[in-house]
Amino acid sequence: MERSDHKPSERVPRGGSCLLRIVGTILLILSAGFGAWHLLTQSPWEEQASRPAAAAMSDTPHTSVNPYSVNTFLSQEVEPWKREKTMEMISLAGIGWIKEGFPWSEIEPDQGSFWDPEFQQDSWEKYDEIVDLAEEYGVRIIARLDHTPPWARDEGSDYHSPPSDVEYFGDFVEKFVSRYSGRVQHIQIWNEPNLSREWGGEIDPAGYFELLQEAYTRAKQADPDVVVLSAPMAMTNERSDRAITEFEYWEALYELGAHNYFDVMTATGYGIDQPPEEDPADDVINLRRIELLRSILQDYDDTNRPIWLTEYGWNASPDMIPDEEQEWGSVTPTQQADWTASGISYMSDNWDWFGVASIWYFRQVGLIPPDAPEYYFAMVDLEFTPREVYLSVKNDALEHRIALPGKYGPLESPIQQTGTWSRATDSDAPFGDVIETDDWGAEIRIEFTGTDLTLVPGDLDGAGGWLYVTLNGEPAQEHLFSHDELGRTYIDLDALPDSTDEITLVEGYGTNQSPQDNVFVMHVHEGASFSIGAIEVDYNRSYGRFVLLSMLAIGGMGAGLATIRVGMNR
Image 1 (cartoon, rainbow, N blue to C red):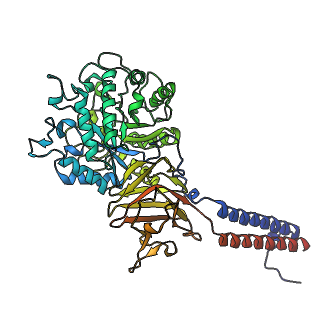
Image 2: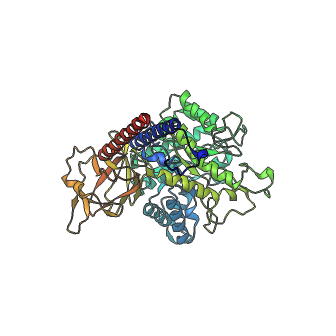
């Protein structure tokens, strides 16, 4: 009798063994087939579900932009290293904009004179340094223009008051835009004139309309590509000689025809004590109250108008601040951090007319004491220690900086710029504008996840010179580019036909690997001139990988079926 190594109680009937083999093999076949199908069809970003979706194009101008911005007080800093440290932290966080004041009263203290009598220096000097610093760190500037000097206003009034003659302000605006043409291209005209304290007297929509009209006209004369932002109105339910609601003020402006004299409507967006997704209501101050402001644009058939937030955020003041002083409400530092970041995501996902949110504020310079509630808006403290809100915004902004498959405009997060890149309107470009440069040493850095990267150039008529290019720190794919005697790869712009509508930068890179983040860099060589309308990222799967996986799947299924057949014949 044949010896068995199994005890009788451990033995399984032959029919049961066959059935188990069949079921197990079927499960293996299904598992292998599903695995092959998943590998062949999954998108590269499915492994990182927390990442943002691919860029979506909007018909509204000035919305395909990096949405992250902060208010700064760089002109109040005495020590240059603090200005640089501020800009460095902003850039490292993926924040694309600063909103900085350029006070008329400081720059032109006497009519026609741009000399600082206190410090005996050119009054433009420190502002020139701020503009230089912003370009060095790849950050764009929204310049707030207001603060009337004594010579230009009525006797007894303060710097919030409008000028006695709007042409005085028009002269200043034209000088400002001319000086920074192509470098500071977004200007905000005044601030919160629906508050009497910000207008220096009786609230007067007609007076602001006249000021805005003059500023817009003179700015466009100096630089047709400058983007004029309206003043934001304070969020308020008050109706008195001190304040009127933002809705009433805007309705008055639209009745006067103000829509002809600004490119971007601005607003303030404070959440007070409510999360960003809380429903709006006429008598409630919260973030989505801006949707009610948007309805005014619909009433006046001006729905192609973007809205940017020039002040945005939540206050995280502690319990020691009395309730009656909590003008902006109060939330915990963790709520401030979470809601500030998620609010920008909410607006980007739900408002196709939203552009930029300037968080109030990045860091103050020591003028606000800790017993004042405004002290607790700061993202970074006086010693440059990051608060929770800075880390939260940084995490989200850096995620948006990596381009997933899709098309991106020249001012969106993935196209990181250093040096002078001027924005210009171009109706033929995919997003309605381009960025252009002839600045030797200017760079574009693109972080992307995909296998292919394509650049849509602006008009190549007049472009020329070389752009040195690298991929992940090495010479780019040589079959796509020229290379010099040192082995460096470059785009020869002179060799491109003027009719070129796209330039392949990366092709089929890493198709047999798991998707990875790549970095492509373009460096402008001396004498080069070039413009960019968009980039596009794609992910093309390897056909060789497809064939291999298909053969493995078919082979596995064949082997499985053979196993089933053998099992059934036993």
